[in-house]
Image (tube, rainbow, N blue to C red):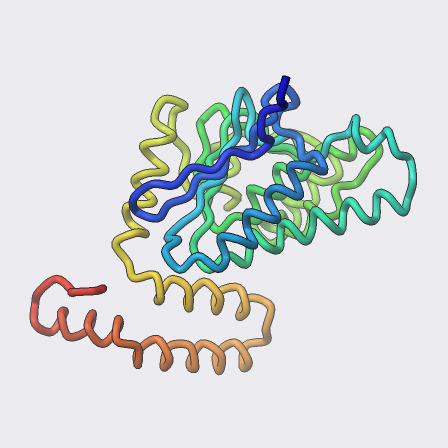
Length: 259
């Protein structure tokens, strides 16, 4: 009997691609096959000029339980672990570098590398019953790679507490701390994702693409370099036909006629 694909991909007429982690029996743990499938898909989508947004979701009862510990334990080798974590980090970078907004649709648990995946996404919508943790410490493994994205979403002390205790936080706490944008009841989470998408998709892709790239570049730069980069980006954006049409439409008091 043929094994089901570890990653499902659907696309709608608007150019929104939904990637569904499809290992429900393992709470969508990131196996080697799933890591590689996500990386290949991200690389392919990066070249798709009709892409407008990406939603990452999980099949079954959970979003993602992190790395597949059973698979990891089967090969107790530091060289293997180094290669595995490098592959996972490369996959995370490929998703992060997509030129369009990436939204995590979170239900159930998002733990360890699953919590990292939420933090890596540009935006996140969580079901009210979702729970988040960097729980590797509970098995003696500090969540080092998840700490990178987690600490760039929430305050240092909040991140460190999650990392050293392994404690879960609920969806409302995750929103208060900045890990997720919106919280909805489980039956309304898809409607909330669609409401967020609607606000994004009525904006021109070129402005979002320039803006996303600048947003993350400037976070890693000093103030002077960030301001210089932002000024160049705005000038390039303003000179583009999309912004020129948008401004003229505003002045004319009409909807913009974007291509």
